Length: 252
Image (cartoon, rainbow, N blue to C red; front, side):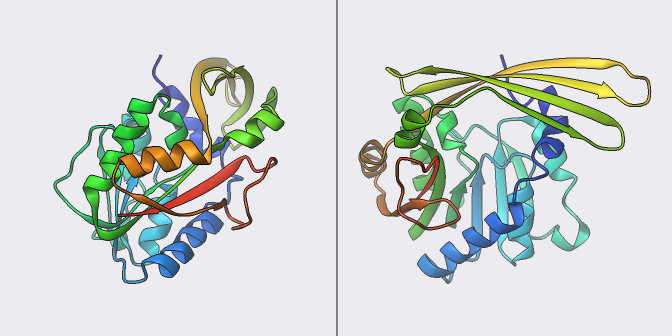
């Protein structure tokens, strides 16, 4: 089953409470700390382009890659005339894509790396990052952090949102596979059209891998990069048993 297909058209509504502005600022601050001369960014798994657009507004030239044509269609609609020279999006699989171009920074946000569920997938994604980095370039990515996932396992969650045209109810039912370090997040999405009161049902399963620092260090180093930082996303606090979202910063 493909993911982010029909689901893509409701993605921005479902995540309208996500602090994209704060997250883009956090990335900008990390770049200014670790690679302040950076001018261009490659985003692996750019989705609908929220992070990329905000970073382009910070004067970076940003190229986004995503495997979902539906998400990219939305992303391309974000390219205003003022950002046309700073923002591009293309289709590609982050495990395979090669642009024949080098970047100062590669980013992969909102757990895109946790969607790489096998060691081979992870190594391929990390190889893509390395292949596109200039010497001394940095790679920033975040993951589901294993100690927190096992300490506080994911639970069934219900999210309700609406805009002028639709009401959405999303049910997330997780199934954890502890011997594989995987979680199947089964999404059931019900969309009510306010105009005609019809209800559409969507279903997607997102398979996620939770990761631990030692395995990421090993896989990153095998890819020819070196971990420079591992902290809680957005706070820069040390990761702990209650830290679900951890970012890693690696350098070429």
